[in-house]
Image (cartoon, rainbow, N blue to C red; front, side, top):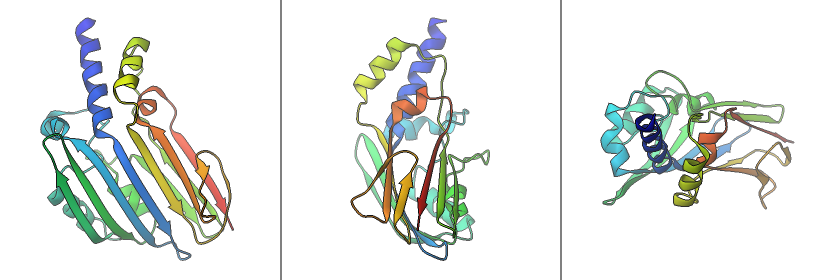
Length: 205
């Protein structure tokens, strides 16, 4: 039991150290758009990723060649800009891509089992929906969660979406000062403790 708990703690720390994401999606009237994706992954996580079998990770490429390969495999994506910054502790990736529809984003954020981290729908009638899969680990006890929250209080998933119209309401997150944008953020620790996926719906006109 103790051994199992230690493994769960290790996996939890691994996931939290990996998932620090900033994403900006700009949708045009015809459904095409620009997607800016920036994420940071610890070097330890990159080193051990090939040996991990669980589906809580590997949604994000861990080197520039993997990013380029994944984009090339998705017909609707086009690479506009890419940069990689590496330190002794982490690798940070920034990619700007064009997309033909939001399904292209879903395809990029799919793992080797073709399971996607997100599901996105965007209609020309002024509605947008984003469903984010949580990496839920039910066996983690409260003491471990408190420890992880204290160690990693600022690890966040941030998403900003801009629309070809004025945002009228948002089911969660918050509205930006810019009336054509809405924003959502979630602590990575919450992704480990929330069983149900997060569903974010937005209406605009």
